[in-house]
Image 1: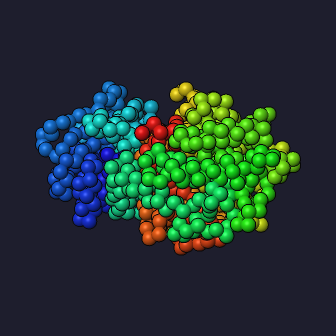
Image 2: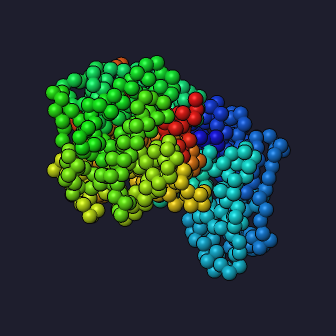
Image 3: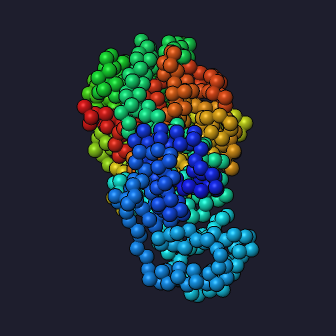
Length: 636
């Protein structure tokens, strides 16, 4: 999380020729009260900044004057800690030469009284051109000098003496990393610190790509920083951990009524009441077996019986005793839902691995059966990918291939490898991941979801039904985010450190593309369900699972990379969860909201299960290289 915020002065904290506004001073003090150190990194001399900071009343500010070349702690004169960056003799001679030439041409020009660089302030516009002409005509004599032209002056600084170098010195003084630094600036001399800091906030920066966020004024930037330091939503804070722990307990209570007499899971309604008229589906039952196996390991009262009930359904009414495998589900009249789905079978594996860890009766036999069925009917060794759907008798294979089933197969394979010790499943997960990264990279990091039996992309699939719950048209940003987390988990568990980097970079690309395309892009907070292949939203609805995965993945990427931008995103997702998605009255999370964050039930009415929401209370503080149930088991 951010421990140091570095501000430019002119054009940022204060407009040219003006002081810092009182309201902004109050926000600077509020940041300081929250334990965040404040620094000014400006082209102005350090002693000038001392006087300014005395007037605004910060308790313990830091100073990097002359564009970072002169660094000091506190506002005492003489300073207790004072440092000037070393620079070359060639740079010193160049500065002396420039000063001499400028004095000849503009003898009355004023210079800022620097200790290191040269900062002339031309009086008239034509004087700027005189200086520029001298520089252009003597380029061969100006050695080891960086030149910055501003609206009111020039800065001639020795090469290597930049705001970035000044911030590095401040980091050394405080014992913080670049990832724990945010910087705020408005000009070209701020670009080095933008590149270095974990979070770059611009003030009217024309080259928008240089910053993480761009604001019209510093008041907006300060408000953003204040908002993002409310402890309840801050990653790694005690308050956030307590917030998630309380949510986890409430979720587990919410789902207590899911079991049917035969064990298959009822679809849960808005207040947790079973909707018994709906089908009892294998994927939901598997999810609830997984959830309450975890619940039993967490010590949640009643979880053992609930996990056993779901296992009863998977071992009994949902299992095809004749042909093997698991039905898609059973209707309210106990009629079989047709097909055998890879998606559902992947969740059976996940459920079984969690139940084995929880030492539930029948779990070992379930896992053995689930892996054998999957290996026989769904895994394609030649392709290194999973097939999607069979008919109920396992005789006719659909020609559809899809990445949703493969994504959850990766999750299941990683859990199977962690629980059984059989590394072939981790190898399989890696093979799938390599294919997905290739497709994503070729498609500007928007993942194609649907394929033919020959694994040819079908980018127009379901164009007439864009909000399909399992096969929507276009790109699904939530899946890009979810794949990013699974890639991090796989790479962290399977790759030597030196081989992890390309996979972490791919995960970052997927996350960035999805968040850029879908988060807060249509006038209200939330992640749009789908986009077209240019990144424009198609279905604006907000599905709860996309937020759960955004919370998980931002936490994982923050803990792996240390980049503050992910901690900020985690904060935004947490705040949105608390304010819009978490149902504070009847429990659990709203499963579908419209583009205005009003309740919607066209795709996901009610609150079917707890899988995504519960995992979002646990994954942010679990090791990134472990499956979630293994992580919970290890903490006991």
